[in-house]
Length: 528
Image 1 (cartoon, helix red, strand yellow):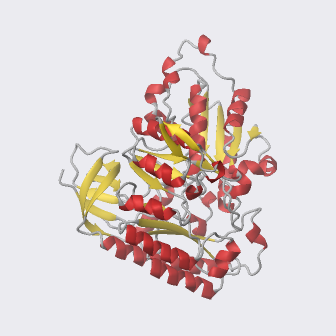
Image 2 (cartoon, rainbow, N blue to C red; image 1 turned 60 degrees about the vertical axis):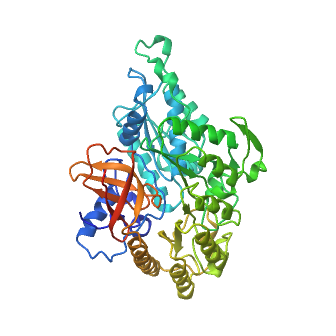
Image 3 (tube, rainbow, N blue to C red; image 1 turned 90 degrees about the vertical axis):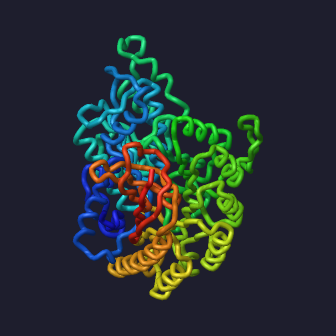
């Protein structure tokens, strides 16, 4: 088996996302993305020391066809086959946006609509947009234009919806524009332009649609799901406009979160990926209010939520965690084998001066000490992070500070962005912007360094036994494409398991022996 990394070059740094057509960076559970396929082809012709790496962001884009494919696969028994109106769905951006799309599709399905598999078969198309960085804005505008040209009836929602005037100026044909997590507004707009089906007059109406379970319809494979525990953010990082798009922190009460988590488990989900804008701040806005779930009093608090989720007996993976002191107690749970020992923490930089200019809530020496303490508590802990290079005012000394920090921190998974201006971000007005060629050079130097660190850390796993979760089966090669506790879907590496038997299925846990490693992936054998 080839050991060339399957990770793609960071498209934010290398090229605008809009360069890939047909709603680029789309995901298909059975095949590599367009960008991954290109990077594999590139990697086969280049030295493996090129800076291929884990994706810096968590794009979870879904095209119209993919939204239909996954909803059909995951909810066949609950969706009617009738002449009901069909809604196409294009979902762009991060997992939080994907969860918004899932909720809208679930509500539309409960109202009797079906999900269209292509533009031609759709009575209307909803485009859930991303507005986080300029390349994502352009990708969203391109996707809106594609939907208008191929269908004509388009409703726009999501983060870019805050820029309604910009959208309408470029695409005056859109029927309606709403902001992020505006579920009811989207449902109302759809019904206004494509009336709800009249069930009493629909001879083909299938009453099973009323049985859509509490977990709702998911756009992920059936064995894992994203669970959003809060919306918005209280931080005011100068490079970010998320608070202006999604507001301040608003946490879901813990009983509400646990009801959804339990429903997902009952639906067959083996792994929950906990997401928000600031996961470790969960419950702060609720003043850690106590609710009752299954007769048990639980506080809406990060630690209490982690304890309760652990009791479900499935994998629980934490994303978007800030390195606050109270995270130490959650790491203790990981050390006791009660949560996946995995933390996704956006450190962003290491230079004091740059962190201050970014208005980040932590200092580099504090985070190094905290990482050391976490590894003392839980030696198996895996830490992934993202960094911004070329931030306004970043000097070579600042950048070298970041490289030195990475050498000392020895993080497991790292992605990076080159800084790009985002309309409305405070950092745009900072002095001493870094030239593009310098940004790119620093980005490549950082990723080359991290590639070596990643290769060293993965070599340490050779000979060990790991539990992995099967994501895909390559029947032609007789290989299972899996993930360990160290690998989040679509952003981290894989464990490729050779010579599997016919009993191995997607969504199954396997115990495997690691035989070899590359810069980002592991290669294993399974005895059955």
